Length: 269
Image 1: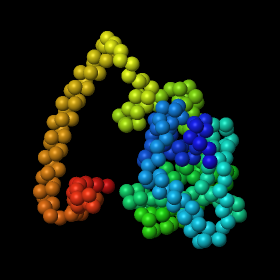
Image 2: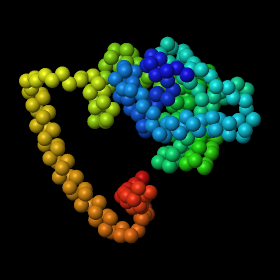
Image 3: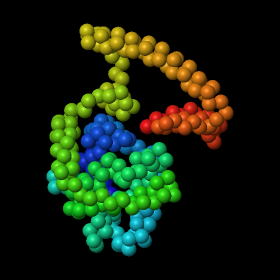
């Protein structure tokens, strides 16, 4: 597998969903920052566990299907900026295989098959590997293994390629940052791009207007947070000793965790 520096020069299958706006974990800005070298690649605990479980899931798939799997190297796509590294390929009968370890917070996204961001990744891999089907072997919440078939969708692939090609040439190659947002990623990119030089500048009219707007919004947020904190305590009072409350379309949890904390979580679908 190619290292992070090499990955800066192509768009991989695990990145296309973010570019297309379907990745629940990353945005187009994350991908741009990584490609331009402004963001350092950081593995999460979930990603580490996913890497450790990948061979286990692939072995489970091989045992269940009888298919012999091979682990391909990074494969170039039809254009020089495209590539993919499938988790495995069953050469006979020609199936792309993708392994996914799914935690409890994402489990509901798999209730009706592979979620959109996985379907996009699979179709990109099928385009690069010139295959027609993908089997996603997913381990849901560590005890529920599933094998989910994803068929190649050429119309979807054409749309993905159009979006990603625009991003690659108009943002990555042209070195134009995608639309700035309020994420930690955006803050990290700006800090890397503009290190503190100890300079003092004279604010122009636009910066003065932004500063005034910043202060107005900060005051409004402070007021809203105070109201929100009161509301949370009223919910806690209403729950009393109960650890959970079922809503018509969701639930409130108020359980003591192993750290001794008792976080209040409100989830409404």
